[in-house]
Image (cartoon, rainbow, N blue to C red):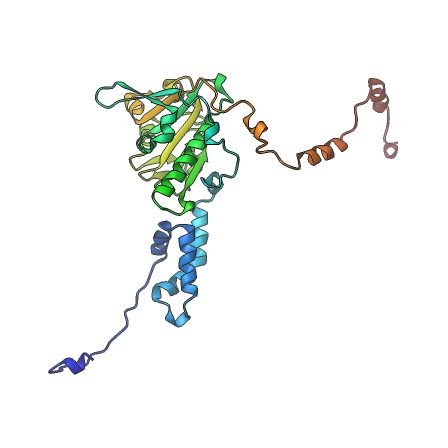
Length: 330
């Protein structure tokens, strides 16, 4: 067609189909931006095509698909069991309407003026701006054990993750909540924007389990608005912008939380909203009254365990047993 449209031809023209090659790293980068559902949908659309009708990209994708999935799983190995979908948590979480004493107040140091800005626990559940801009600390003395700080953190994390997913029109499997008690354990986890990270019973003062925590590192940890890296054993943790951080710990105040070696400085006070829990957050016996989290076969298991244990005996019987000798040892 080109030759027919020309007035004069001085050379031969040969049309050669362009050969495009894709690297494995390019495919990994593509998959990193897709949800599991989108990846499988892509594969399904390719499978529906005839082999001859597939593009070079589709041929390459099908050849590498199994290995791509394997590498993706390896990257989250060790932390994938701690990450769950906010719409389908793997364990019981208190219902929002059953939370109590949400009028307890917390504070944060304001920029420039250094004045203390007051917040209520209820505000964390109604204004996403607070979680997007600041880390939230739920602290309490040792006497507040059992008050429900962890349940409060889980309820808040799922509430935010689900609302964000629905508001942005994203697939449900993007509503991720990551639960850990140390930083090192999530070094292989691939954070994405919108992930809610709960650091439960996390205390920088515990230098045995939190080896590399410093004041500068806490500045990064408490800054969800900015991307950064956290030092961990043998590997650094990469945090993109928009990872929500919720932290619980037994400590009477911010300095007790940081410990003697780390100053609870003004930058840390500015980057975090700290609540000192003094009242229960979950009704006493909540899960027992709801019959939540109980194994339905617990009675049968208990009966079997009891049947295999010798019944109680009197002291005289015990004394006679002590003098008894096995027949095959005589």
